[in-house]
Image 1 (cartoon, helix red, strand yellow):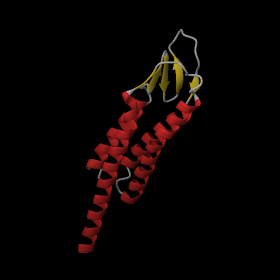
Image 2: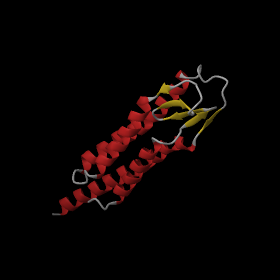
Image 3: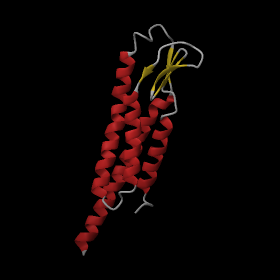
Image 4: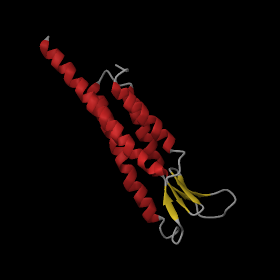
Length: 149
C-alpha cells in the first residue's frame, strides 16, 4: 500500500536528491562545484568544467526512488529498484572524487571548501536502506499470512 512507512522514506529521499541538483557541492575560490559542472560566478572569467555523470547519477537515483514508491504491489521488484538506487547513491562519491582529481591542476592554489550538500547522498542511502528494510518486512508478513491460509 502506498501509505506505508517506506513510501515516506522514499519520498524524502527523492525530494533531497532533487534538491541536490541546485546546491553547490564545493567552492573553489570564485568557482562553484554543482552537480552539472564547475562554474565561475557571473562576470568573472574562469574555467568551466561539465560534470554530467554526477548529475545523471543524482537524477537517475531520484527517478528510481520515485518509481519504487508506486511499485508497492510487487515488493520484490520494489526492493531491487531501491537497491539499484542505493548503488547509484554510493557511486556518487567515487565520481565526485574522480572529478576533484581530474580538475586538481586547474584548481591548484585556490582555497577550497566543501558544502554540507555532500552528505545528502549519504542521508539518501540511509533512508533507502530503511525503506528496503520495511519492504522486506512487509514481504515477510505477507508470506507468513499466506502460509496460515
